[in-house]
Amino acid sequence: MTAPDTPRQPSASEIAREVLATEQAALARLIDELPASFDAVASLLIGVPGRIVVSGIGKSGHVAGKIAATLASTGTPAQSVHPAEASHGDLGMITRSDAVILISNSGETRELADMIAHTKRFGIPLIAITRKPESSLARAATHVLTLPDAPEACAIGMAPTTSTTLTMALGDALAVALMRQRGFDRADFLAFHPGGTLGAQLLQVSAVMHTGDELPVVAPETPMGETLVVMSQKGFGVAAVLAEGRLAGVITDGDLRRNLDGLMDRRAGEVATRSPRTIRPDALVTEAIGIMNENKISALFAVDDAGELLGLIHIHDALRVGAA
Image (spheres, helix red, strand yellow):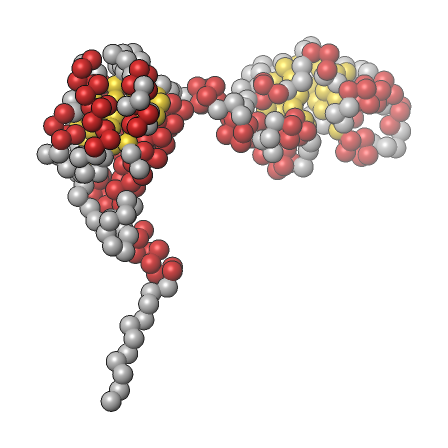
């Protein structure tokens, strides 16, 4: 008698694709079934004078923290409050000026009861994010953001997977909608992200460029002997040739090598490269890095629309702030 064949177990990558396909399908449903109350929720939150308090328990609590952090970093003051801590004094963090977003897939999470009661007691707007529009949480809410009733992506259909992905995506959609309605721009984003790679990538040239007496500046008629002294003193390996306050040319180490024959008998204007690469002071440091890399140079002069010299950015400045 032949033993039955053992079913082949799917590989880890095959399982991963199944999970991602399940969550992708759920996200597609969320697009098609975006809660009808979404616009009303956005209008309510953009007018809140205080903070948006986001909370949940378990995996929903972790998602609540992420949503609160995204809101706060994109112009909407927000904080996450743990429901257990709220029941032991942290309800005092939630005021009549605030709004509350509570996350519960089932809408019947016991740990949220005290926060629900607190919003009712003080007339605080409550937004529910749940899969159950008839749940206790939904019935208590001012507005309900209902998630599609999509299957979880785990093997037993119980671990929060699809539901947390949907909640996080809905939180992102809400944060970005508020961000755009507030007119939150790059400058605002930089103000909230001064450190790390994000802050460095959003820095403008004007924030790091050298100005004033730090600049290696010579006139077109300056003898090359004096020009070399200026280049050596300033330490950037370049010199700006100014004519009537405007950048007329730039002298680099390459220009010196190309003009070694009779160099000391020449003047700056004769050696300088005309129409050099420049950058505006309001450009991003990352843009300056791109220009320097593309042209194999280590410094750029910053000028205004009229060509007036305003500053200099060196590749070392970009490295110092972590943008390169």
